[in-house]
Length: 210
Image 1 (cartoon, helix red, strand yellow):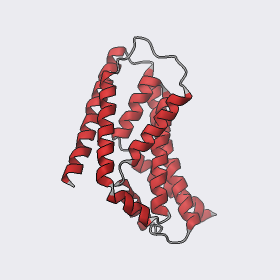
Image 2 (tube, one colour; image 1 turned 120 degrees about the horizontal axis):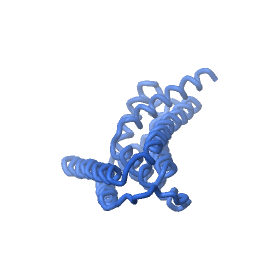
Image 3 (cartoon, helix red, strand yellow; image 1 turned 90 degrees about the vertical axis):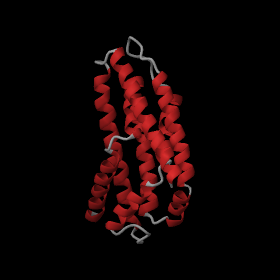
Image 4 (cartoon, helix red, strand yellow; image 1 turned 90 degrees about the horizontal axis):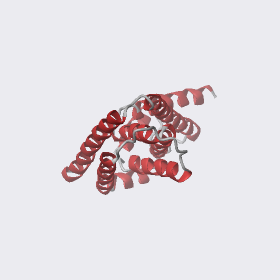
C-alpha cells in the first residue's frame, strides 16, 4: 500500500509538471475562464487532464501498438490540431467583451463542448506520449512491466496532478474576472488570439518539416 501511495504521489508531480507550462491549452483555459466563468475554464482543464490520463495509460500499461499508431499518424493529428487552434484564435479575436460581466448560468451543452474540445485538442499532440514513455521508463513501468497496480496508481496520480493545476489556474483567473474592464478583456482576447495563432502556425510548420 505504501508503494502504491508513493507511485501515486510521483504521478501527481509528473502530471502537475507536464500541465504547468502555459501553452495553447493554458491560454484557452484562461480565455474561457475570463469570457464565460470558472466552470468553463475548469471543464476545459478537465478535458486536458483526461487527455494526459489517456497518454499516461498508454505509457504506463505498455500499449506499444497504440502508441506506435498515434506516432505514425502524428502528421495528420498535427494538421487537425493546428487548424483547430487557428479556428479558436479567429473566434477569440472576434469575441467582444460586454460592458457588464456575464451572469448567465453555464449550460450543460456548453460545458460539455468545453470539455470535449479541449480533450480533442490535447489529444492531437501525440508527441506527448514520448514524454510519458520517457518518464515512466525511468520509473520502470513503461513497456508493460506487469505491475498493473503500480501503473494504475501512477496514471491516477498523473490525472490528479494535472487536474489540480487546471483547477488552480481557472480558480485564480476567475478571481480576477470581475476586476477587468471591457478594454482589458479585449486586449487579453487579442493577445490570446495572436499567441494561439502562433502555436497553430508552429504546429502546421512542424508538420511540413517532419
